[in-house]
Image (tube, rainbow, N blue to C red; front, side):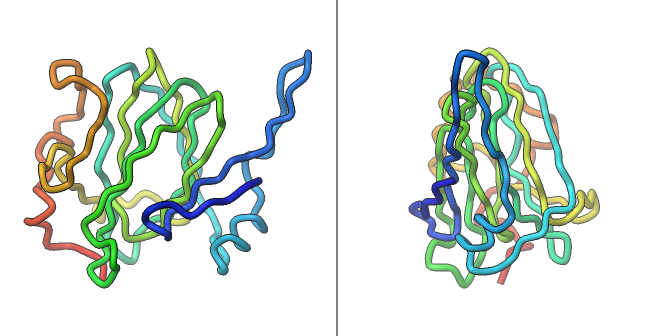
Length: 184
Protein backbone atom coordinates (compact mmCIF):
# COMPACT_ATOMS: atom_id res chain seq x y z
CA UNK A 1 0.00 0.00 0.00
CA UNK A 2 1.33 3.41 -0.98
CA UNK A 3 0.98 6.27 1.55
CA UNK A 4 1.21 9.94 0.61
CA UNK A 5 1.11 13.11 2.72
CA UNK A 6 -1.20 15.76 1.29
CA UNK A 7 -1.34 19.58 1.41
CA UNK A 8 -2.20 19.28 5.09
CA UNK A 9 0.68 16.89 5.96
CA UNK A 10 -1.06 15.12 8.86
CA UNK A 11 -3.73 13.85 6.45
CA UNK A 12 -2.65 10.77 4.49
CA UNK A 13 -3.86 9.36 1.19
CA UNK A 14 -3.50 5.58 1.05
CA UNK A 15 -3.55 3.81 -2.30
CA UNK A 16 -3.88 0.03 -2.06
CA UNK A 17 -2.63 -2.48 -4.60
CA UNK A 18 -5.66 -3.87 -6.38
CA UNK A 19 -5.14 -7.32 -7.87
CA UNK A 20 -7.59 -7.78 -10.75
CA UNK A 21 -8.22 -10.83 -12.91
CA UNK A 22 -11.10 -12.56 -14.69
CA UNK A 23 -12.72 -13.38 -11.33
CA UNK A 24 -12.80 -9.77 -10.13
CA UNK A 25 -10.38 -8.16 -7.71
CA UNK A 26 -8.70 -8.52 -4.33
CA UNK A 27 -7.16 -5.83 -2.15
CA UNK A 28 -5.99 -5.31 1.38
CA UNK A 29 -8.12 -2.52 2.85
CA UNK A 30 -6.19 -2.17 6.09
CA UNK A 31 -2.89 -3.22 7.60
CA UNK A 32 -2.00 -1.84 11.02
CA UNK A 33 1.76 -1.79 10.42
CA UNK A 34 1.50 0.24 7.19
CA UNK A 35 -0.46 3.00 8.93
CA UNK A 36 1.75 2.92 12.05
CA UNK A 37 4.88 3.24 9.89
CA UNK A 38 3.41 6.12 7.86
CA UNK A 39 2.32 8.01 10.98
CA UNK A 40 5.32 7.15 13.13
CA UNK A 41 2.93 6.13 15.92
CA UNK A 42 0.28 3.53 16.51
CA UNK A 43 -3.43 4.12 15.87
CA UNK A 44 -5.86 1.54 17.22
CA UNK A 45 -9.28 1.54 15.64
CA UNK A 46 -12.24 0.63 17.83
CA UNK A 47 -15.31 1.10 15.63
CA UNK A 48 -16.33 0.62 11.98
CA UNK A 49 -19.16 2.61 10.37
CA UNK A 50 -20.87 2.51 6.99
CA UNK A 51 -23.46 4.72 5.31
CA UNK A 52 -25.46 4.54 2.09
CA UNK A 53 -26.36 7.90 0.56
CA UNK A 54 -27.91 9.17 -2.66
CA UNK A 55 -26.55 11.81 -5.05
CA UNK A 56 -26.33 15.26 -3.48
CA UNK A 57 -26.26 14.12 0.15
CA UNK A 58 -23.78 16.13 2.20
CA UNK A 59 -22.82 14.68 5.57
CA UNK A 60 -20.84 16.96 7.83
CA UNK A 61 -18.78 18.78 8.74
CA UNK A 62 -18.57 16.82 12.03
CA UNK A 63 -16.06 16.41 14.84
CA UNK A 64 -16.02 15.26 18.46
CA UNK A 65 -14.53 17.11 21.42
CA UNK A 66 -11.75 15.62 23.55
CA UNK A 67 -11.50 13.12 25.06
CA UNK A 68 -13.77 11.65 22.35
CA UNK A 69 -11.90 13.09 19.34
CA UNK A 70 -11.67 10.59 16.51
CA UNK A 71 -9.05 9.70 13.95
CA UNK A 72 -10.69 8.16 10.90
CA UNK A 73 -9.68 5.95 8.01
CA UNK A 74 -12.31 6.54 5.31
CA UNK A 75 -13.03 4.85 1.99
CA UNK A 76 -15.74 4.51 -0.64
CA UNK A 77 -17.05 0.99 -1.22
CA UNK A 78 -19.47 1.98 -4.01
CA UNK A 79 -19.74 5.22 -5.98
CA UNK A 80 -17.84 8.50 -5.68
CA UNK A 81 -17.69 11.26 -3.06
CA UNK A 82 -16.08 14.63 -2.47
CA UNK A 83 -14.35 14.20 0.88
CA UNK A 84 -13.56 17.31 2.94
CA UNK A 85 -11.52 17.88 6.09
CA UNK A 86 -10.96 21.13 8.01
CA UNK A 87 -8.05 21.61 10.43
CA UNK A 88 -9.40 22.67 13.84
CA UNK A 89 -6.04 22.58 15.67
CA UNK A 90 -5.24 26.13 16.82
CA UNK A 91 -1.50 25.39 17.08
CA UNK A 92 -1.28 23.92 13.57
CA UNK A 93 0.30 25.85 10.68
CA UNK A 94 -2.69 24.67 8.59
CA UNK A 95 -5.32 25.81 11.14
CA UNK A 96 -8.56 26.73 9.36
CA UNK A 97 -7.53 25.22 6.04
CA UNK A 98 -9.67 22.70 4.23
CA UNK A 99 -8.57 19.79 2.10
CA UNK A 100 -10.93 18.53 -0.59
CA UNK A 101 -10.40 15.30 -2.50
CA UNK A 102 -12.48 12.86 -4.50
CA UNK A 103 -12.58 9.25 -3.36
CA UNK A 104 -14.22 6.49 -5.36
CA UNK A 105 -14.79 2.76 -5.50
CA UNK A 106 -12.72 2.43 -8.67
CA UNK A 107 -9.35 3.64 -7.30
CA UNK A 108 -10.12 2.37 -3.78
CA UNK A 109 -8.02 5.14 -2.25
CA UNK A 110 -8.47 5.86 1.45
CA UNK A 111 -7.93 8.93 3.57
CA UNK A 112 -6.52 8.96 7.10
CA UNK A 113 -7.83 11.93 9.08
CA UNK A 114 -6.24 12.53 12.49
CA UNK A 115 -7.92 13.85 15.63
CA UNK A 116 -8.50 17.60 15.46
CA UNK A 117 -10.26 17.79 12.10
CA UNK A 118 -13.86 18.33 11.08
CA UNK A 119 -14.90 15.86 8.37
CA UNK A 120 -17.66 15.60 5.81
CA UNK A 121 -18.43 14.32 2.34
CA UNK A 122 -20.80 14.91 -0.57
CA UNK A 123 -22.07 12.11 -2.81
CA UNK A 124 -21.24 12.72 -6.48
CA UNK A 125 -22.52 9.42 -7.92
CA UNK A 126 -26.09 8.10 -8.05
CA UNK A 127 -25.39 6.36 -4.72
CA UNK A 128 -22.36 5.85 -2.52
CA UNK A 129 -21.49 3.44 0.23
CA UNK A 130 -19.01 5.14 2.55
CA UNK A 131 -17.10 3.12 5.14
CA UNK A 132 -14.76 4.27 7.89
CA UNK A 133 -12.87 3.18 10.94
CA UNK A 134 -12.56 5.34 14.06
CA UNK A 135 -10.21 5.14 17.01
CA UNK A 136 -12.84 6.36 19.51
CA UNK A 137 -16.53 5.50 19.78
CA UNK A 138 -19.32 7.83 18.77
CA UNK A 139 -20.18 10.12 21.68
CA UNK A 140 -23.31 12.19 20.91
CA UNK A 141 -22.67 14.57 23.83
CA UNK A 142 -19.24 15.42 22.37
CA UNK A 143 -20.35 15.85 18.75
CA UNK A 144 -20.00 19.27 17.15
CA UNK A 145 -20.00 20.64 13.63
CA UNK A 146 -18.95 23.45 11.30
CA UNK A 147 -21.19 25.13 8.72
CA UNK A 148 -20.80 23.18 5.49
CA UNK A 149 -21.30 26.35 3.45
CA UNK A 150 -19.05 28.73 5.41
CA UNK A 151 -17.51 31.08 2.80
CA UNK A 152 -14.32 31.35 4.88
CA UNK A 153 -13.63 27.64 4.25
CA UNK A 154 -14.20 27.96 0.48
CA UNK A 155 -15.42 24.38 0.03
CA UNK A 156 -16.52 23.26 -3.40
CA UNK A 157 -18.86 20.36 -2.67
CA UNK A 158 -19.41 19.84 -6.41
CA UNK A 159 -23.16 19.54 -5.88
CA UNK A 160 -25.46 22.37 -7.10
CA UNK A 161 -27.27 24.16 -4.25
CA UNK A 162 -30.74 22.99 -5.29
CA UNK A 163 -29.58 19.33 -5.34
CA UNK A 164 -27.99 19.33 -1.85
CA UNK A 165 -29.59 17.04 0.74
CA UNK A 166 -28.56 17.61 4.37
CA UNK A 167 -29.73 16.52 7.79
CA UNK A 168 -31.42 19.39 9.60
CA UNK A 169 -28.64 19.61 12.21
CA UNK A 170 -25.99 19.86 9.48
CA UNK A 171 -27.74 22.95 8.08
CA UNK A 172 -27.38 24.85 11.38
CA UNK A 173 -23.82 24.33 12.56
CA UNK A 174 -21.92 27.55 13.35
CA UNK A 175 -19.45 29.25 11.03
CA UNK A 176 -15.78 28.42 11.53
CA UNK A 177 -15.02 31.86 13.04
CA UNK A 178 -17.73 31.32 15.69
CA UNK A 179 -16.43 27.96 16.92
CA UNK A 180 -15.70 27.89 20.62
CA UNK A 181 -14.67 24.26 20.98
CA UNK A 182 -11.42 23.81 19.09
CA UNK A 183 -8.36 21.70 19.56
CA UNK A 184 -5.16 23.14 21.11
